[in-house]
Image (cartoon, rainbow, N blue to C red; front, side, top):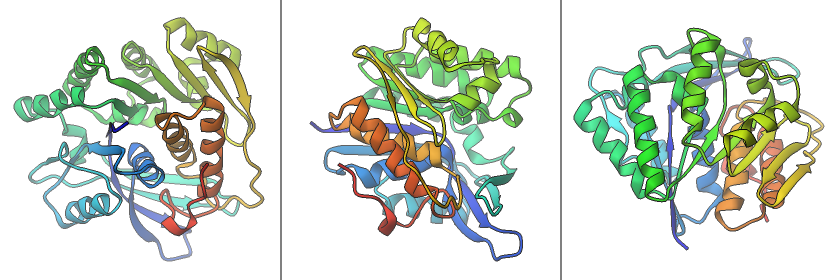
Length: 310
């Protein structure tokens, strides 16, 4: 069965490496990383992938859109904004593969993707034509207040048309004025979500939750259909109407760069679920892809290193 998926967020210029080395340039961003890995894992004849964002009118934006096209990701719903630029971030990694980020994104084009009343509403209206919509806590954080309000209204309309909304929590404190503001916006969004892919440490920081059990009680109390709790190298917890499972992660001997591990897991999980796989198989596929990605530098690995997926 042919399916379509729109992923909403920000693609940035990425520079990555170690301080004493030459940095490499690419394009990345949490929901974009997931889009790339989904496109690589799924047959493009059966899954149409569209990226919803905004870019500038500069040469980096041109190169960015060309990159999306090479990966099989559409950009018909991405705005081109005059006199705007994409955001930029630098990843520095230490010997253990842990990351340090520096961002330049406060005036990035993606922040204003829904601000033009006519054009923004037109793009948002198109979301009702997709089977699945995907966004993250970073998507929510970078938008203006009016952009957030319009997005939530569009998600509600899309669900009435049968779309399923997937949310990856990706909480980044520095993107919010304070914790209370972030909590308020997250709770408003979760009213329109069907599947949550949550990193436990992020929600622990956001909600002050002490245990997985407490977090699961919070999400199931909202009435979500499907909840996945990601815990890094540890097992993940999956709750569906069929019950609860705990699926072990994969052992990685040498971690090079943990960037996009959670984004890759989400892509592996969704690719399997969208193709009719069980939540158990989906979690295993998510772990497998994440384990591969963290053995390479940068958010997007070379296609030749993509693992075989069942």
